[in-house]
Length: 218
Image (cartoon, rainbow, N blue to C red; front, top):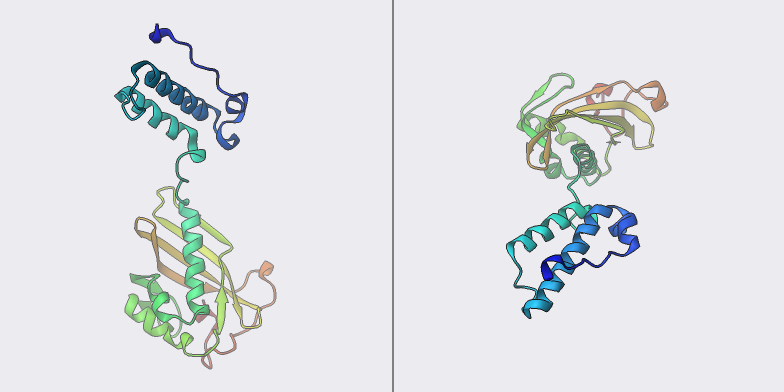
């Protein structure tokens, strides 16, 4: 008899929209599984913990199919990770933390500037240390476009660079590489003149060393 027992119909809200209205099929499976467990418990007088392997598999499938409403949220996309990394990188300048800045630089990074190209993390950190000496940050930056390869291992980040007054003085162009799960670091960095849509530009950023060319400011 119990092999052909009818499964109580799930609430209409479950079929229509599922949990939080996001996955009707997953919610239905979950509803089905729960009722199956309840029937088994009633007939065998065993606690719900004594479930068959098939029931466990059914519950697992229901949880996966139900999506974010039941399972934990999916991790950030590669693009979101790079955007977050770029913003944290910029925050290191605002916080006057050279150590934090160094954490985002790859060991084999190449930063373009004048009078010379900085090769390797040690050179980059040493070359940029002067920008962390003033009490106030001489400039700031933020990404306005990030593109990631389909492989999810390399990304280009670009955006405006502003002086203390908020005037756009250039653009930064950085290539980020995935060096560990969820860990992105800069491998190439080069500044460029502002784009027409960026607004008015200046020759150099206040607070930067005398004679610092605009290309040297991120």
